[in-house]
Image (cartoon, rainbow, N blue to C red; front, side, top):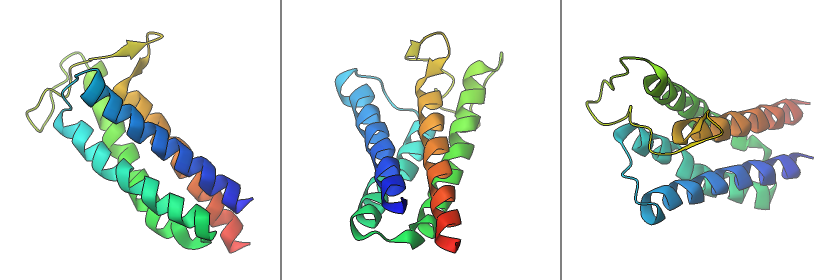
Length: 132
């Protein structure tokens, strides 16, 4: 069960990584500073979770949760900036710009937020099972 959770979390992180590379390299969207922070938190999860899934290492939640929970914070802030009427990024970048939108609610930061939430939920389940 734990290995399946880790494989699932790895798949989510890999899809998020490929998606972010698609938006910047293929679609030509320039990533803002908050996007870069989210990438810094997401990209290592692919390797960390992938190796943990391969080796069936249940203690990975201790390394993965700080990255994914911090990612939730950054992605939530980024999503808030995009929806606030006077959304201004404290970093001074173009973080409030909406380059892509689907179904009227999905934006790039919200996709990132969804990925971080799914990974965090998976890692919390791994932690719970590891403690049993």
